Image (cartoon, rainbow, N blue to C red; front, side, top):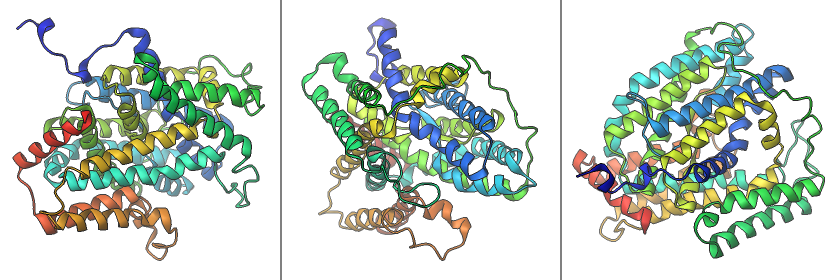
Length: 460
C-alpha cells in the first residue's frame, strides 16, 4: 500500500505551518509561568544576583525546548514521538535549594548532581518500562484524578493574583483583588464561549484567545509594565557550564537520583495517561523511550545551567481540550521555547503576562486532567471488583494530604519531603501497593490490553 493511502494517526498528522506555530505557541503560553517559577524560587532562596537569574531563566526555557523536541520528534532511542511538552519538575526544588545553600557546592554542586541524575535516569529507564503491569486503570485513573485536583490550587492562586503570602510572610494585600478576579473570570468566560460556539481552528485556540484578551485587559488596566523592554537585549546565547565546572558530591548525587526516580514514576503515569488521551496506547517500548528522554532532559539541563525535566500535565489537558493530538504542534512549542531562551526581549513580553490572566486557563487545563481520571475510573466495574473501590478511595484520600494539611508529615525527616510533599507520588505509591494487595500483578499482555482499552476513552 502506498504511503499516501495509509491512514495517518492523529499523533503523526502534519498541520499547516501557520496553524502548527500558533497551536505550539498556545502550548508555550499555558506552561510558561509554571516553567519559570522554579528558577524564580531557586533564585530567591539562594539570593542569586539578577544577572545570574536571567541566565538561568533563559537556560531553563532553552533546555525545556530541547527536551520537548526530543520527546515529540524522537532521536535515536530517545523520545516517545507523542505530543509532549517538557518543563522543570517541581520535585527537584527542595533538593536543589539544599545543595545550592551549601557554600562548598553552590550552583556547580547543583548542576553536577543534576548531570549525574540524568545519566542515572537514562540507564534506569529500561527497568521502569517493565513496571507497566503496575498501572492498570484503577491506578492510572486515581493518579490522574489527583494530578488534576492537586494542581487546582495553582490555578486558583494565579486567578487571585499570585500567592496569598509575600516572601516576608505577610499577607499579600492585592490577593483576591476585584480587578484580578474580574479579568480571570472574563478569560474563563471567553474560553468557554469560544469552545462552545466557535468552529474549526478558532475553537482549537480557545485558550490562546482567552489569554490574549486577558493580556489586553490587564494592559489597559495598568497591570502590565514593559518599561525595561528597550534595555533588554535581543539575543543572548546559552553557554554550557556558565557557572563553572560541575561539582560531583556523592550526597548531592544520591539526593538528585532520588528525585529522578520520583520523576520517572510521575512520568510513567503521565505517559500512560497521554496514550489514553491521544488514542495511541503507551507500549513498554514507547515508555522506555520517553523515560530515557526524561534522563536526557536532566543531562541537558545540568549542562546548560538548567534543571531536570518532566512532562507538563497542563499541556496534556490542553491536548484533551483542543482535540489537537499532533506531536508536531508540541515540536513547534519546543522550537518557540528554544527561541524564547535565545531572545530575552521576546521572553520579556511573554513573562509580563500577570498570573491572574493565566489562572482561568490553568483551571480549565487542570480540570480536564482531573476529568480524564474520572472517565478512566468509570470504565471499572466496581460492583464485581469491590477491591478497586478501596484502591481508588484510599489512594485519592492519601494523595489529598499534602494539599489539605501542611503539618501532617512535619515530624518526618527532611529527606522524606521528596515524596510526602507530592500528592501525586503518594497516590501513585498507595494505588500501586493496594492494587497489588487486592488484585495482584497483571500479566504484561493484560497490562497492554488494559492500556488499549483505556485509549478508546480519548474519543468518547
